[in-house]
Length: 172
Image (tube, rainbow, N blue to C red; front, side, top):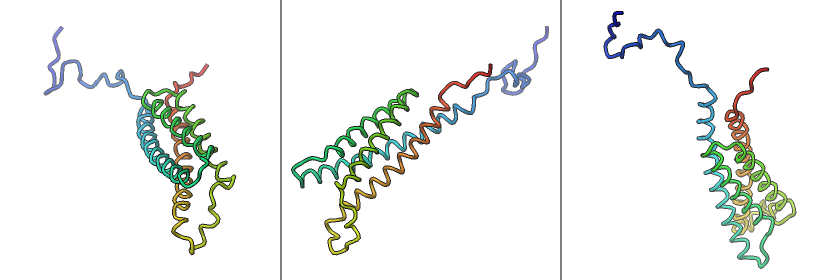
């Protein structure tokens, strides 16, 4: 048999006629890579939000003698969920990502219960005569709102990520 002459710079046997036999990367792997990148950015933003919350909690606790147990529980649960979420994202563990969704939602729920119990006096923010003392509470209100918004984005990203990480269902 005579050997084919290879085209300029192309190895022999790759004349382009074998394209139908080549492997194609499934689009879900590309979606997983984009989702992991987006989730990592969301986790970094949530870490900043959590650190601001811990600073506010430290300032608030230094002014009062009794620590706010719900806010402390929320902060601990929040950092735990971020740690688990980062592990799940790095190692592509869907079970860790599911635990992240539950724990971070619990953290946000604890914080919202703390706010609803009246441990924060947001209603007096509109009074401009006492503006200097209310700036810290306004900052905390913005932090909680931004944290809740980030939580919604993170949950939607994790749901998409888990769906794309899971193997496709085979038709019976």
